Length: 257
Image (cartoon, rainbow, N blue to C red; front, top):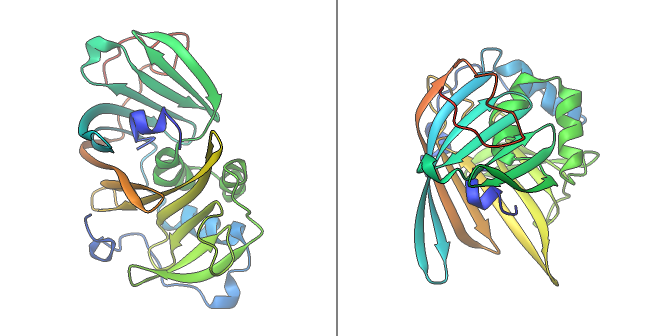
């Protein structure tokens, strides 16, 4: 994940996954009931019909740099399935990012600084997959470079999971890991080119809890095996009213929500 995701996740974007509530999750289907990524994403979308479509929260990030850790705080507004706004604190700086319709626009002093085709993993796996048809989620995964024709069973932190995008033993291809009992995404691995190097980014979601068990409260990002960022979510509010100007991409104007 490139900046703006580390500026957000950098949000985007550990409470134990095993301790998260089971609300909304049905019993795991027979193995032969899951044959494709579409089958998996259908179960994800069906498991939590009351998952939030809008949410606002504060995210505190600890970013590990060679010179030492730095702390960041952001205000985040989500309108599932297609938009996320991140305002870096303090708001007077006018910096942040808007992710909308597969695009990421970053801002400095309230003005557009850069734009790229980019999806935020937290928005997709914490919100969008619960608010859109399975086919749209599969298309979003494909846009992230995940080979949706490849699935397998695995375990992660003792939990059974489905892996979309990588064969057994493949730890570097773009892939998503989904808890096969709770139907919650737990992990996304992405390979990112940085100059002449390929960096493997491993983002893990945990700390899911009521009243919004689909939203992770902890995001850990590992780069080449070392933790590069830990983000913690607090002050989570769901069902918020989204101001009409919140996702106006011409500038990052102050909004109340």
